[in-house]
Each structure stands twice: as C-alpha cells, then as structure tokens.
Length: 145
Image (tube, rainbow, N blue to C red; front, side, top):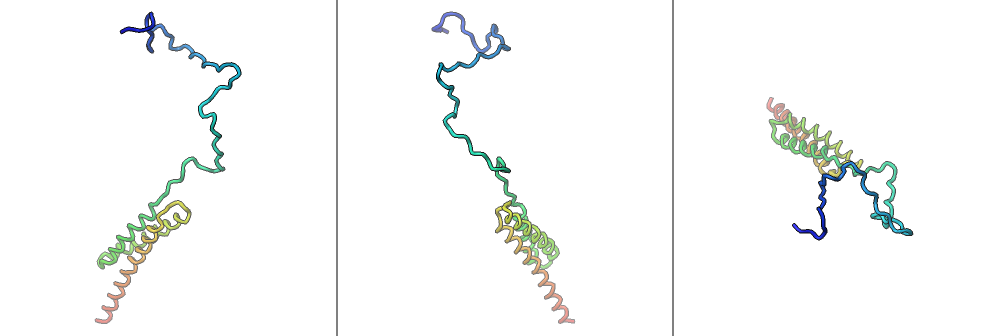
C-alpha cells in the first residue's frame, strides 16, 4: 500500500489518540462575515393556534361499521322466520350503533355516515319483519280457532 504523504497513517483507531479528549473547536469565519447556518434564508414557521395538535385526529368509524354489520345480519335473520329472536336483538344493537355512529359523523369524529344510516335502516327493518310475521301468525291462528 503506497501513500503520497510520508510517515505512518493514522486511522480512526489510533492507539496514541486520547478517546476522552475534547473535540477541536469549529472553524471561525473570517473577520467581518457572519456565520451561515443551514436554512438561514428561510422564514420562520407560522405559530400554531392555541390548542392545535401536532397530528390530526384519527377517525373512528367502528360504530357505523358495527351498525351496518348488525343491521344486515339482523335483516337476514328477520327474513328467516325461525331466527326472529336474533333479528330483534341484532336490530336493537344496529339501531344503537347507528345512532352513535351518526352522532360521531355529526361531530366530525367519523366519516362513514352512509354506513351508519344503512345499519340503522336495516336494523329497523330487521326488527319490523318479525313483528309482521308474528302478527300474521296471530291472525292466522285466530281465524282457524
């Protein structure tokens, strides 16, 4: 290995160097010049208004989605006559979740108002269908006896 400078080369792991020595001071600019800092030519960032958070709020769409799922399953159970108990329970849950989800959309905490509304409507229909079936069954039984 050849080198242009005479004498031994010093690497980063020089056994003669003191690892606890103070680092050398930074180079001073010539007299009459101001030091240049990175980004010194850019204006300062505008101040944030009071109460501003560093990150935007994350949307919580869970209630609208839960309303839609409960409403669809409740509607299917309502169409199937012998699962009317599940239709009523899931319909009640869909109505509750849909109302909470629509409230969150109104406050700006969620953005799936369509899902919440669809779950609310499916939950209502899923609860009404078993009531119609039971009323029809009651009328049929009364007409026979």
